Structures are given as C-alpha cells and as structure tokens.
Length: 221
Image (tube, rainbow, N blue to C red; front, side):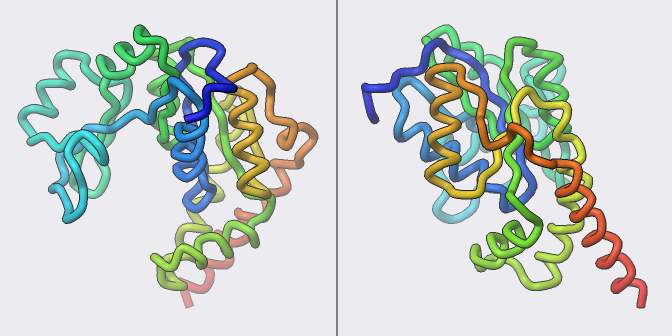
C-alpha cells in the first residue's frame, strides 16, 4: 500500500452503484492504494462456495447465529436476498473506526438507508456509469450473464439509480483510473468528485427507464 496518501481520518464510506457500475472493483483498488482503509466483510447464511474463505469473502454463519445478531442489534444493516440473509456487522465497523481505519461498505441503496440511520457520520457515494450503453457493455464484458440477464440488470438499474439524490456524493465512472483517483481524493483529502458536478443524472435515469419499459414490453409479447 502507498504511504504517500494516508486517509485524513477514519470514516465509514458507503459505496453504491447499479450492477456493473464498478463499485466493488473501485473499493478493492482503493484499499490497495490507500493506507488504513479496509473493505467491510458481510455476514451471510448462504453456504460457502468453493474458493471462498471465511472472514475474507464473507463471515459464514448459520441461521440461529444470524437471528441472534439481529436481536442483539449487531448489524448496521441486513437484508434477506434469495432465501439467505446478509448483514454488516456493527462491531466490526466500529472496531475499524476506533483503530483509525476508514471502512468501505459495498451495499445497495436500501442498505445505505439503514446505515445512514445507524451511523450518521457515514459518507455516501453513488457511482454511476456515463451512459446506459456503457453499463450494458461492462455487463457484457464480465462474461457472467446471458443477454436476457443483462437486459434484466439494465431494467433493474433504472430503479436503483433513481435513488442517487439520497447520497452525499456522485461519482461518474467513465474511466476506471480517473474514478479511482477521485475516490482516493475524497477519502484522503475530502475532495468532492468533479465528475459528478453538472452531470445530468436525471437523463441517465430516464434512459434506463426506457430500457426497462422496452424490456417489459418484450417480455409480454
């Protein structure tokens, strides 16, 4: 890690983006570049997959343990997704902050709402693609989704991106290195991302809504 640009002070950063927006890649790259920053590791009840490590990819726990953590107010945010629970440990985040580490929290807008209520000092950043076409290309380049799945993700992106105005900062991920530089400047020096200044987010959301409408019409044929 570089020691030239240490984080100015320990803070919880909420990073959200539509699927394919680049938030996970940016978070990992930032942690490699900036001293005393970590990525929050979520708890989950889903089974551990081949190649995954406990405490690195997730903290794998059973249903009773997860439910007990809920009762003990152990999560900053949690949600049930496809029959499995996911949550961000309150204790882990607070310990990192006490240890003068900034924490990168990679979650969706619903989780972000929960975290802002539980941790008012958090700084929230919504990461957007420069266009719907760019988002579609990035999803295709990942090679993980079928054309139908990509269309579905683009459709979902419309509702996800419509919550951009709930965030403190907007960052446009046109170029990965430039976006990483802006995120680093925010964490290290408190500089607001310039790419989001004057960007017509409303037009981007409207374009995504048109994609969602077309996808819905096609599905009904």
